[in-house]
Image 1 (cartoon, rainbow, N blue to C red):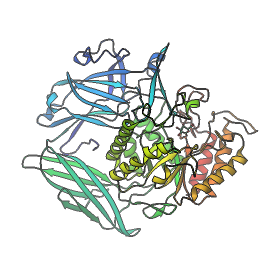
Image 2 (image 1 turned 120 degrees about the vertical axis):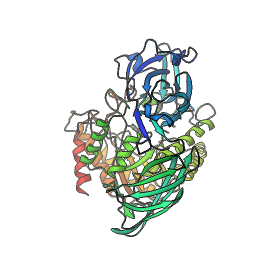
Image 3 (image 1 turned 90 degrees about the vertical axis):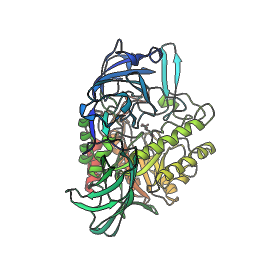
Image 4 (image 1 turned 180 degrees about the horizontal axis):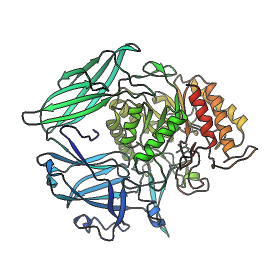
Length: 594
Ligand code: GCB
């Protein structure tokens, strides 16, 4: 799915700002056609943002069900005769959209974009009313899964993942125009040959049109705007002499300017292209043929007040903190991040492990911390064939959105699912196939949970690399760092026998900023430093380890629970982005080692 943009032939209008908003606890809105009139009893709600914390109201914070958003928009008068599209960066977790009284699109899945061609329902120069019903409920057939429990205090959303179920319109909303015959999609694949510095790049492209046929031409422009290659036809391969590679730390991008021309119309779309290769050779992870070591974090889209709502200030600040600390990469734990974040990673050479929202598919174990009751993970009544279908769709749609991004070097199709059973093997094997069919160019993996260690995991066999979350010294052997080190060494050695690269996608421990002790004491800044230090020593002793992503970049909100002190406190930074002592340790390690 193309990212909307302004070009010679396309215009954008932002629908961000204040929308009217109300809850619909009895689910009456659809029957009562609330979309057909100004929303009654509504209040202002900023978009993008999660609705949960904007109003200090416990009922809204823990609300379960449908909420309604509405606003009007004047369609620019210059858009007469153009195709008009309404696009949502995401709606968490499901949405139905109306323009006036017409339902224009429904979408399930809280972290990917969707859009509707609304040309027939709007008039250039006139106002249109946009109404969106957003449903924040998770079920066994959604990704991630969950269930609603009816209690005497009302419905409660239960789930098996460790971040708060923020909901709403989290990402920018746009109206945009294109010509009727338009570029609908493009797939780019890149390569290079020769020696670094004097090499020839290749840019394969495949353009999809919609609305009719057109003559397609492409030009590849370098960062200075000079045309370095050009071609005719909807697909082909361009050669770039002395190519400037996209590299970790240097997000060099070319512009692939695509022009689709009919007798009367023209459409221009500009696809950013980073020329780079990704390859796994033995236990090495190579970017542009050079061994790459992942340094960084599993993160969250999570901020005070706005929850998972996107904003430029937080985004740029988080990237600056990554730079400050010397991180070269992150994982979009545990769902696809906003396209703005992904654009920034492309443009600044930050390497990304791109993850689907498949988290919490481990119903047997997570009950204690996450609050959901223990159940059988894969069964007719819980995660079943329909869930697997939804999971496949999430994989396909994520790849469709991010396939052209040079920053993305690995697809992570799930985080810590059950993976030691025959059922899990049956569930996951076809999903790896789905990912490989959608993108034959990038490694595919999933993140393994501690309960399925080397030798017991039945899913890693399908992955190109080993990604593991390990909490030695925290959930396992808390306060026993010496013994924890031995167990970690042993486990890493076992995984190394697979002959695949290993990335530790999570390690660390909860730490309350400002809590100190001179004796080993969990939750203190000193203990986090000691634990992380111990873990790093183990990584350094294992050759197959090609990356470390500490958990987490920053503290983040979760459901309330006895193991969570106002959220998860495993951040290197606090939720307000102040460094804990461990941040200085990481900075020293990651910056000094180059
Ligand atoms: C994990 C999960 C992550 C949790 C983390 C923790 O293994 O992948 O979502 O937040 O542990 O802190 O318990």
